[in-house]
Figure (cartoon, chains in turn cyan, purple):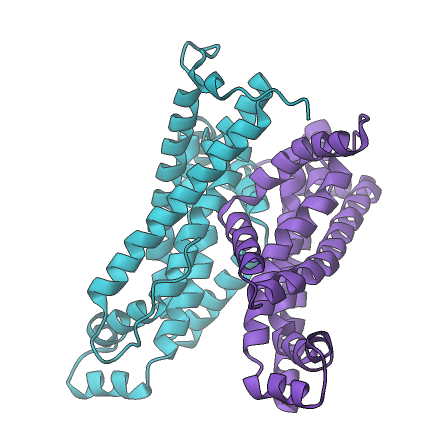
Length: 247
Length: 226
């Protein structure tokens, strides 16, 4: 193959005076930021929705179910385009202008990716709560806890531990899904990947480096959650797992 | 709030339908090819020959840790290079065609994990019974294990296919005209993002929601028979 390998191109200067490896690093930074921020949004909202879907209140369940159905059945890229190009037109003019002009792109992207992921987290939280025996809630109520307190002190602490392995793979997925935000102008790792290919045509080197970078991010997240899993394990109750597959 | 003009959808319905057809074609190709390759990978992963295990594990782990958009772009660029190396001549394959290949190869990694747990869900005694009947390895797999694994995993395989159907929208990265790509191109020209993207979202939702309900139905059917 007459491909011209050139690993040193990473140290060459780009148009904007930086080096190509600077682009990779800055992309890595944005990917990490967008992913972690989205994960925070997804965990908060997903937990709330997951809890709603297990309450005895029919309305709560219906809202939670509808949310999950909508956000799981529309592709992520379409959802992001909706947040960027459709929602600002549907809200009152003043808010629409603010969204288009003053609100940083990255906030909309984080919200979009977060809401998308929240549907998946909600599924897992619901599954975790439903896997507990009814007696847990009954015991809580019998002790005089309110419905909410049984969630806070009895059911959620158990449910989170049970679904931690599934959460781990979702937390690893979010790094991959964050790549889609390039389509709405976030300068994350995939955007830089694409840009570097356009500038240098060193497809293979940059593909290898970016692949390893994504691999490293997913791996770190996996180890972190495996650590949390070990530290929070309830002795004798949950059969120890190894924290999900690596990658 | 701008006023809506959904006539833009009617005027361009032909183009959108073409895009949708392409999306469906890629989905079906990648589903069939992916399940086929995925099954082979699963068998390799569960075989007793170490190099086959490593290969299958490496394949699955690499593809599962990389963003799909990156693979789509990388294959679109690298595939012609590889073809040129093999055939010795320029082989421009185009964005639309490279996606068929990319999705088949990429989805195989995901289908393989599903098939692996399907195969592992078949009791060991079944394999032993196959050998006791005098079947070879191939016969045991083909006639005894795989049909049961496939059946057990059918709902999961179909759910993965619904995800695949949505993921085809990522060919946006290489400018191929799938359903979303078609809508995006019309938007660039007619500047009616609200009507266009909303329509796309609704159509995706209706199709995927209906399919996922069907899968649920199928799941309960299968559960009853078993």
